[in-house]
Length: 300
Ligand code: GUN
Image (tube, rainbow, N blue to C red):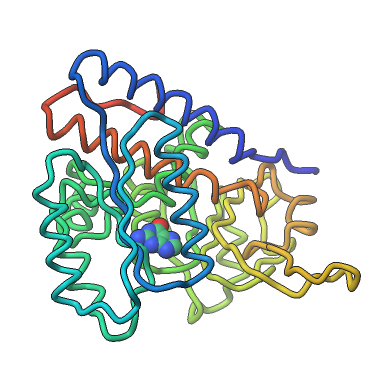
């Protein structure tokens, strides 16, 4: 079997069209647009690229973009003061503090200082609790993007066996909660799981979020399964003529795509969906604040 490629790049484009339409509707009815603020600390080149992309896409869908770039040495109290200012700014409906933060700053304290309604990353402890109890939460962007692609591909996920490899707070745990809400039977596997290949082979839906290049092999995959590869790993380019690194996922794509029924590529799979979902969450936050009907990004 040769797997269908789930085209995240194209899917994200379609989602951005829906967001643009919704923002335009909001502008016409409310006379204002949702605003997204991003705080970046220090000069990590990969983070700078992310933040630039986020700002560009925010403007492209018609929303207001606010960018704060702080010195790597900024004190935690100054950062908390800026978060407080953003929390109280009525023009801003979503705030993302780019991670990782410098060592001298307590990430948990910073994340939990964001008002939960503006926490478009869904990392605040209140949003984590709301999601895990099935209440109205802000959903972390990467798992939300994976869920939207899965629902688009399958219609319903009810009764399917889902295995999530990876137990991070950003991807693994919220992903498992979302799949549970969709009535999957969910297993969270990780580096200490006994006989991981056998556990993976039970999966109708396999989500890989371990951060290890090409870790999941073709013979770990149940024939016909849907494979969602969250990994973005930079490895030395196998072509010695190309000096720049190659991006690969956590799944050995060449092998897996011969066995799976459907698979997300890297790049061009989950990655583009993450930023699109950040924009979607900002619109959702605006609608909740204003008491407007919430967009349903699955159906619209
Ligand atoms: N750094 C890399 N990915 C993310 C993300 O999704 N959110 C935040 N806040 N920081 C990140």
